[in-house]
Image (cartoon, helix red, strand yellow):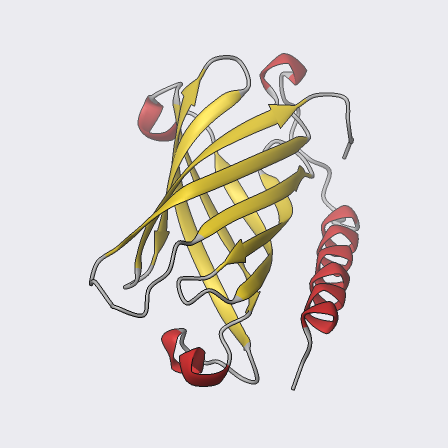
Length: 176
């Protein structure tokens, strides 16, 4: 059985690999207005999870994540969370961020894809393609900017439900 320490080690390795691959892209990034560029480090706290179907086994779930923006659109991140069945879990991911979604300056769309760890034992079948607690994940997120560095986000968890969270971006703490 895999331990949580092993899962976090794997998540760190995946993040390192994602950053390395993203930074070795041979094509130069398009010129962008640096003032309009997203800040490089984002912290998200998501204390609200709504499930499409009620299950008596559901427990309070929450998510805390940190994202590193590689450029205006690409990012990598690590989310630590307690899943809906009370199990400590993690999601290591890479993603893409579209700003000014549908021509609206306060609206954005983000899609991330990565590896989830944490659904084990009797709850292993609660995520698709689970192998010894590891499962692929894709999470689309709709964000609405509130203030200079904050946004409220709605993250879709496939057929399970949605997560509502707040993200805050920090300038100057890390750089691409």
